Length: 333
Ligand SMILES: NC(=O)c1ccc[n+]([C@@H]2O[C@H](COP(=O)([O-])OP(=O)(O)OC[C@H]3O[C@@H](n4cnc5c(N)ncnc54)[C@H](O)[C@@H]3O)[C@@H](O)[C@H]2O)c1
Image 1 (cartoon, helix red, strand yellow):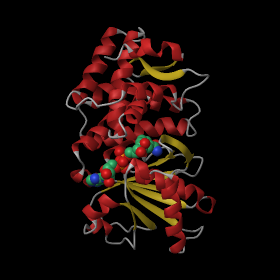
Image 2: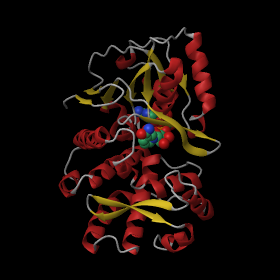
Image 3: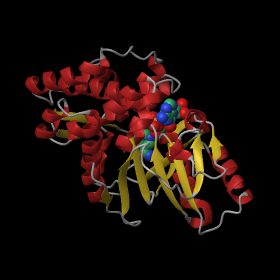
């Protein structure tokens, strides 16, 4: 796989592809997911790491409290404005290190080695970070891309099936959004090709709209329903699986509102079901689900904003007034 650069207002950054066999010299103050550290501390890829900061990963720890704790550790280590952080882990490690790097001394450099499929195919690219507050997901955040992203597929060997599914739906999402040709070829690509292609397709969108003012809104496909599902199932679902169900249910809403042709509906549904049907339907609280939709951060002027399907590769933003939400939800069954 060829490395490539992503254009950014914060400075262009590199995405490179490596393997455990490569001789890597890892630079920077390492901040590592505890599970990844336990699994790989003896691996040769980590041999050049120096006194890493180990963090426990769960949604509750994606918090200001963790940012405070990490800041103290950096100060103890003598970090200064020339310091460079190296995040190793999945999306949660990324969010914490990116947010911290953006405010420590008003901004220090950081690099990222994503270790989950979701973080390799989606979250690593685009420079967004966010942390939770008082149970509200992704409320505080900044745009702050790393200097370098190093993709090492070998990390997947230890991932649970649910985290492989989670990454799969983000890959499917970006191919669905990128037109019929990309969607049609998705099935026949190898996992490595799917990963590479997903990054190239996301790069095209974020380079046009890094600060999420125009084109980038499309990437929230599956997220209005997905975030509500996460909020109403106490975050027991990996993010990408919530997005998978989110896309499926938003497809049903698109059909119910007669936005999509029957033929495209069936093709998209079959492709999502290909994976979703093997996963247990999440157990969620229906009232909490509805309340979460009413509080979604993409809402505007009191309406709930859904990204709905028009055809393969074409989506539209639909604002639903709160009094119509029960009718819309009746299409999901
Ligand atoms: N900033 C963005 O653009 C963006 C985009 C999508 C998702 N996210 C966020 O990312 C988070 C989810 O991230 P995620 O799904 O990458 O995972 P994660 O960071 O939540 O990690 C999931 C689990 O996998 C473990 N793990 C990590 N790598 C492993 C490996 N190689 N082998 C075995 N276990 C491993 C972790 O310890 C953890 O238990 C959510 O908080 C979501 O909101 C951010």
